[in-house]
Image 1 (cartoon, rainbow, N blue to C red):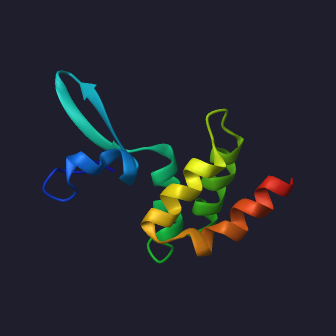
Image 2 (cartoon, rainbow, N blue to C red):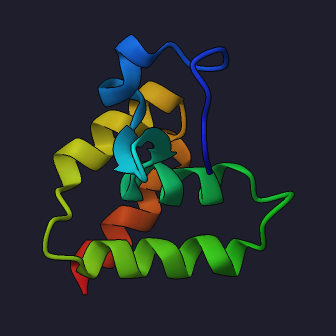
Length: 93
């Protein structure tokens, strides 16, 4: 998902899970992997729950996945209470 400065203040990108990458000389602001997974889980009315769970499963297997950073972002977005049991279940495996 691409975001614009008028929707989310660029000064808060790091805490909101937004990355800026240069593409053909233009800075493109996109959601990072943790934010993308959390958005899939947050918007379960628009996105099937199975897609969100599979994204979380794949993200948890990634070598750069860190539970504390993921939890911090989830708390910031107000979704940690819903996501915490899912993360705990995946970490037990």
